[in-house]
Amino acid sequence: MPAFAADEIESKIGETMGVSDWIEVDQDRINTFAECTGDHQFIHVNPDMAKMTPFGTTIAHGFLTLSLIPEMSYGDAAASVKGARMGVNYGLNKLRFLAPVKNGKKVRGHFKLTGYDEKAPGQHLLTQEVTVEIEGEDKPALVAETLTMLFT
Image (cartoon, rainbow, N blue to C red; front, side, top):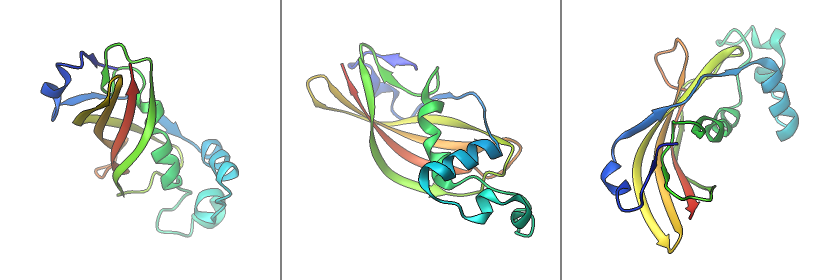
């Protein structure tokens, strides 16, 4: 993660922090998510029935795509504060699912720093706009405004 000193991060608001590596969303991942959540809707887990839908194949659960954001934030994609010992998901302000992720597609996250607030000594709330791109597609899978509490 690009790590900035607490006194310099405010100057980075509005800037793109980075882009994650690609993550493949295959049927095994979709099925595993279905098992974890109990969401076995046929558009996710039944390739034969899903062929008859406008998608032509199974699609990932929207919440599966959303759940990949933490993995996408590793590396050099998302912002952080120097000296942070850990970060925890704090929630979302906004979330829109814009396009389905078809079985076998790859996705990656684009991270833009949109806010920073020191909530208490040693606690920094980062707000980032995350756009999840689908390889080869014009529309993104989702756009989310994520909140991360960092502890220094």
